[in-house]
Image (cartoon, rainbow, N blue to C red; front, top):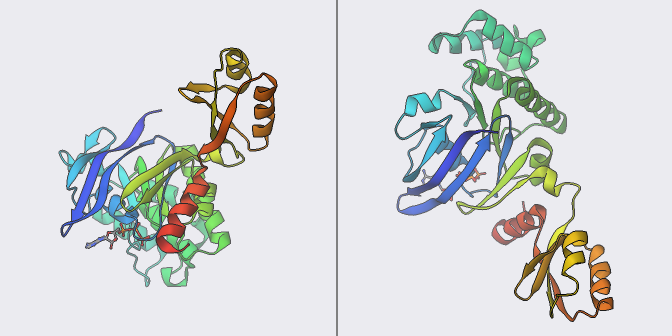
Length: 303
Ligand SMILES: Nc1ncnc2c1ncn2[C@@H]1O[C@H](COP(=O)(O)OP(=O)(O)OP(=O)(O)O)[C@@H](O)[C@H]1O
């Protein structure tokens, strides 16, 4: 896989206050990437820097190999974004809105307009006035507008705000279809872990302008494994089976293993049967969900 977007040590200071501290991550082609964090964590500021609405204080952002600092126009032409509410003329039809947008951005054909309408599933209602659209339909029209110039990267700030559960599901299906059929990458932001789990391939947690965790959803959904540090005496006689059966990593004071909680007593019993002195067993890595809950309950009193 290749990176469509890379943030390299990005920093942003606003009026002397550090808002984003040394943020680095990459988004791969075809990936739905989530920026998750409590209100005020810096998600919107990060997105505004990526799309060029505000400048960077330090670091760089590379989109499809082009630096937004050195080659701004080349870099941002690969991006389609909904950051604030998409501008729409409510007294015009969906189709007229897209035509209006196409007129302002050269080189968009009628075929392209028809293609994006079909892609977002608005064919039947496209000739009705936007004022009659539900919020979900307006979101889809916004999505259609972003897609007109064939972006490689779609960036959506809190796209499901205000949508009901059916609207959220529909929106999620559309994003998945876009990544699967068009190989597009998507960045979405949200403060809701449950929603991000269903929507994203990978999630980055941002807290107070700092990236505190980044994980594939497949690694923590349906997987309650944790990493334990087991402190022991000498392990010479048991190293073989620890490595082969438990995939242990040896450290100075013992070893670490990635196991379910239920497996811990089995492992400890086997060590004791093998005459190994066991001093302690502690969990050293928590799941993304636990870490996110800790972050949000400490900073916002829950979301
Ligand atoms: N123009 C600005 N002037 C002063 N402070 C700002 C400005 N823009 C953002 N901030 C501050 O930066 C921090 C991050 O804001 P940001 O909007 O990026 O957070 P967020 O994670 O998107 O949160 P939310 O979900 O509430 O939008 C906040 O403390 C906010 O008050």
